[in-house]
Image 1 (cartoon, rainbow, N blue to C red):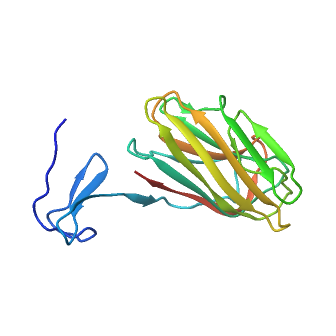
Image 2: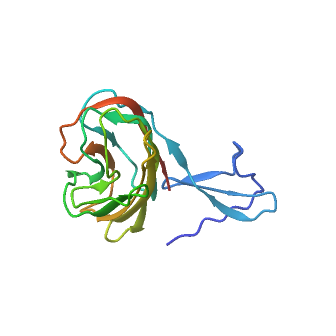
Length: 195
């Protein structure tokens, strides 16, 4: 293991020669010459959810420790609950999840072992918005945990959490439905990832 020492007073966030990137992380010094690690936050390109049965975000770097999946006015043509699925170089994993979502409106719940379930009661064309945060719990076992909230126009607040250990390092996320056949018909999704 080697140690990198920064000796110049380079302000964090400024485009100066003293800022250094290593393995996806940025390092610099603040105005008091204290060393600091800066977190990289990347906003992907939003995908319209106006067609198709799933939306994939691929090429997520190995240094990522947290992913926020965002929904903006998303709806489908059916009533199947929504899933966020994780994957690695072997593809999207569709088993081994432990996830539950509830609605605080009427205390209904739903569970899934096929993905991080995000909704409980879905009505066709209900434009739903919110976010699900997925965080790396253990890099040795590639275990990720999730939590989040979605709100639909009928004022159902869906709150969800779950856990999944992947076979390898995460590099992709999919947004789909439990039945895998309902079609997206409005809105958009995007992700933010950070190290």
